[in-house]
Image (tube, rainbow over all chains, first blue to last red; front, side, top):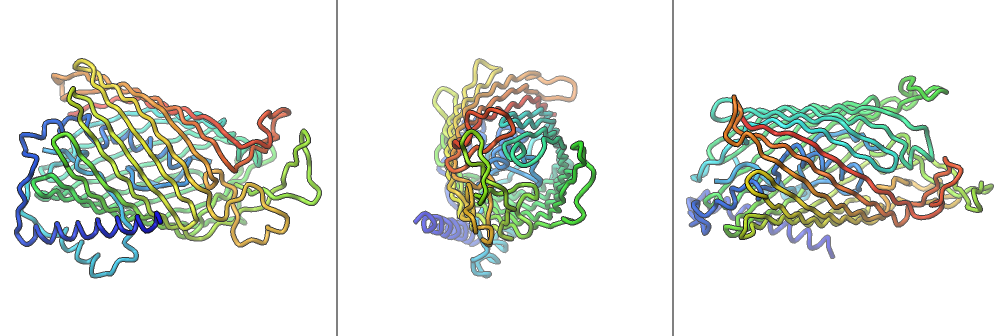
Length: 83
Length: 413
């Protein structure tokens, strides 16, 4: 059930990506609905997905060394140091 | 304009089963120069971090130093040095071996390149322990479009690891590596795809996929599984199972997707949320929920409060204790990270900004402290620790708490 959902989301992302890129390549232009002068809140550091990369990377490493799950975050490198 | 961190959430997808023409089309499209607004390079900054983890009689601490500097108009280089100093008497060590200390040293180098509206990144990481060596190569590309409201990212990493097994003398001192074990290899491949989207002037969302494949020696050379014996030993009336070697599959493939949303509140504060789903070919399925609240105080302080909930099912070949005769199974393992368990963590952090008007070569700086308390509860991993005379938790499900501390200073220049 969940695998099917993952598969559908994966397909949707692919379709979206290809459609967007193909459309833009063909010269289409889309009017941005959030204007550049309306992005002050987005530019605030508190809205960043990773405000401090060195800290986020370490926190990901702590979790990945102690859990079965992995991926889709800003972890780097190999090794473990966890046994 | 968005900076790279805001726009660069990398996501990941499993492309192994896609038609080749689709993969080729995506790469071809990303290689084109599109008539869009320009992206920017990451900021020049330096971070010096001290990290510490303490839990289950394990202490891991050390520094992490990250330097990043723009070179010319179109490139930014970075270097990271990171170490883990490990002192371990974990549940695995207490039940099968002697406490040990070791060090892991990790060095990374990389460059980000800017081509109009496209960022490309190349990186290399080397990690060394006395019984484990690892080399990783990273490639990523991100492209902003639709007036910079949308950013699409692709990434790939390749890793090559070498596993050895340490030997210890009668006094418990490291005497070299086991020649009978020799060296085993492990290859890792990561495939990432992501999309981030500014939805409103207060809401940004991202969807990330990552597929990872491991091929080679996937297990730990020191760990053992448990098995009931014909002539069992007892402690306090509890049967203590014996040991049998672990045997893991030679391949592991996993898919992870993460959905994240950051929302800007009307009084200058932010809520960050994350949902993550994971599954792999070993039968593990995991879910992660995270929420974080960020609140600036006056002009100089930022406070973070966060909560994270994680749960997973067990690997198909995991068993707390194997029955007699099951030593002939193709695969068997008793790593607690492959068992069914849940963990929660709650944490907070403070950040203090200084040099806001600049000083010498620096534009600004921040001093940061973060603390997280993690609590692990294992459903089918039993505590058979008999290293102490009294263990009140003997034969009960294992549980432990861990504390994570980070103290770091950042400067921008």
